[in-house]
Amino acid sequence: MTNTFTKEIIHDFVSLFFPNYCRACHGSLVKGEEVICSACMLELPRTNYHEDPENPLFKKLTGRIRINHASAFFHFRKGNKVQELLHTLKYKNQPEIGVMLGRAYGSLINEAFPNLYDFIIPVPLHKSRKRKRGYNQSAEFAKGLSQELAIPYSEEVLERVIATTTQTKKSKLNRWENVNEVFNVNNPTPIRDRNILMVDDVVTTGATLEACGHTLLKNGSNSVGIACIAATQ
Ligand SMILES: [Zn+2]
Image (cartoon, rainbow, N blue to C red; front, side, top):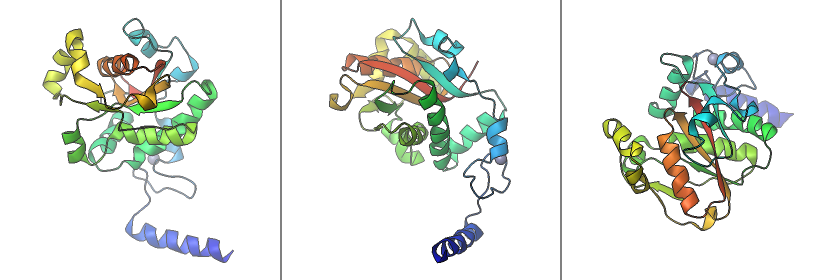
């Protein structure tokens, strides 16, 4: 009783200095809500791809790479709430958004295909970019998924060896001969014979995930699948 009371006082005190607000609508969070309010979570446009093995994202990628499943939590459209939220996650020093969404999506994935994966690999940032930003937003999503799926994730296994800029991204990644130059596996031991869930924040063409997947398979992973926060249509 006393303990709970003390905790509530501390909670209220901390809230004075670190207001507990929804990162999507900036409204106040009520007790039990964290990072994003329940109303926003209901309003964000879900794809429900996890319920449909033949979903548009899977169709887009299959044939280019051998994947067992591909899904994304939300639809990404220019100007929609998802785009705003991902921008905040990426550039406003709020990694907790990624963790929260990872936990929420993890519970859906766990229901749809339990035990399909045994290791999670986020699409890596080049180390210079990660140093600048302080964290990799996809790794934060991976962290939340890892907690919910109860399987490990690692930021150390796969590294991005070429720092692609927005302008060069397309031409570099779309050329098959250069794909193997972008990512590198440091240590293949943790991923050997593992069924890997690859995660990214937004998937557009899928070229990045395709390159990551080929690198993982080439280094001995048994299978790869994909879970992203959002997908463009
Ligand atoms: Zn909200």
